[in-house]
Length: 467
Image (cartoon, rainbow, N blue to C red; front, side, top):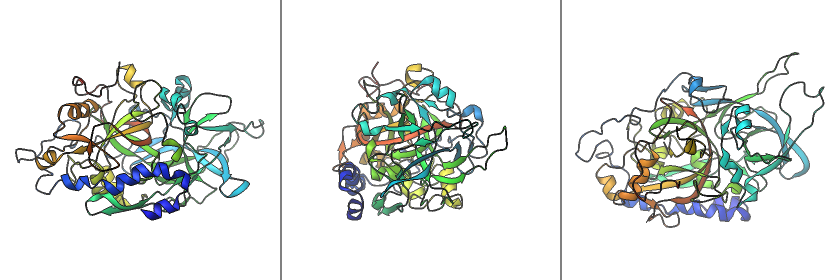
């Protein structure tokens, strides 16, 4: 823990404090304990946990290419479910070289979301109108960039070079050392750290549209897609196209490790690229971006001025690589090879994630929901609501996999004997809601049926979004 604080500058320490405390003090987990071998596969009556639609074996398609009609991110070139990757167009930019004033280096970014509906459709990215609010309380959460103005001879057809103010440093070594029960981690360190001038959310000078455009690689190659010294920790392949013959265009692209989760009872896939806290960045295999920590705003969801949407994670869900009820932080660390580098050659890690070794978070609003109010409330900036299962829930095998936002609301509102929130400063049970964790996770698509509506009506006085 000390080495983490001393390796990151003083101005970032306030952002580190909350999640460092979470890693160090979530020993309340040990009070409720991980699900034991005797209970983790069994329900409260002592029998095997029955499979339920959308859960258990309901991870959807597990191999081959995802059909294009199941994509929300229509610019994706392909989604390969056999190796857990999404292939995305890779766009060129440049950014200052840290410690070398006046020098720039090539950077490579992907486009995921836009705050304007017409431009989102034109670019084949997700429409996320909430992103227009992102800088309300934190101007640094949006990076203003400039575009080249090339001559026709310089650019017959293709994207203009984007000039970023800053870029992530991908050279640190990501470390995630499991603790005695997996999570909390014994020690951790992010594998990519951004400077004060960097945000993945950009505005082009002269425009108010906000784009989600995270940098995922730097330099001219060769690109390290095994230990990730010049790429993000989820980048498993980089292809820089040769010059195209007259009248043709060749794509640059990158293959990135996606994440599995659920929305409205259906399995989904998404991409995690950035987090506002160092521990979150380690668990998500993403870039630690201090500027996101104060993005508008904790607990905001669908209230005025919020750029965030809620996701729901669980500290001490069930574990076991073959357990259809497994979910959460301990599951990821124990069953998802969280301590290892991700690469296409690490087939054990890929296979574990294919079969549900991710956190399996539950998302709130999603682009395919039938109610346009909820579809348009989607945002890639997720405000984590972390649940802590009680001793009773764990002992009775009731800490089962959750797959629907409203069902989580209802549990938190009506069954505090089973599910509470967690205080990140103490690790003790706390009122359910925001905990100061935000993550940049753009959705890609769904692997079974499209999420269209929640599985349950909200209980009275639950934390259902306001109307």
